[in-house]
Image (cartoon, rainbow, N blue to C red; front, top):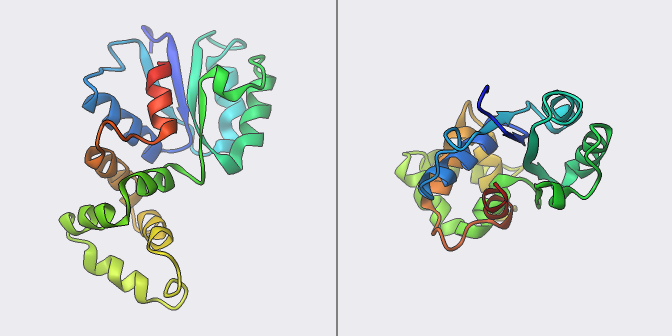
Length: 181
């Protein structure tokens, strides 16, 4: 991180994977640009990371993604680090539920099911759909649950869903984050 001037703080490894994949698809090498991606292991760690990398610590420029439900944690953590509270002006962009929700909504459930099928997991997804707890749910919600279940699935699918995107139709938070960088 010695050449780093900007740190992008994201909640988890799946978010990091999505940002990396989109940057690559757009022909950007974030590391070469002095931009480092950091998966914080959850939104409640924002204060620690903002303090470590922001004004109180290394004095680096910060940016990131967060889920709407974590907005208060992000606002408090960034305020404590002396950055203020206007998250979007600071380069922090909100995902409505989470990044998987944004990707599924943008691609549409049919396209996401094709990605799941290409990974050889459509049968597993259909099994989830038949479970009593998920039987009456929307395909969108079932896909979000499927992505979150299973070891490493969320990380793997975040990159695959970004790879499936039409680059003219990227979810707003991802698009805005890369434009900000």
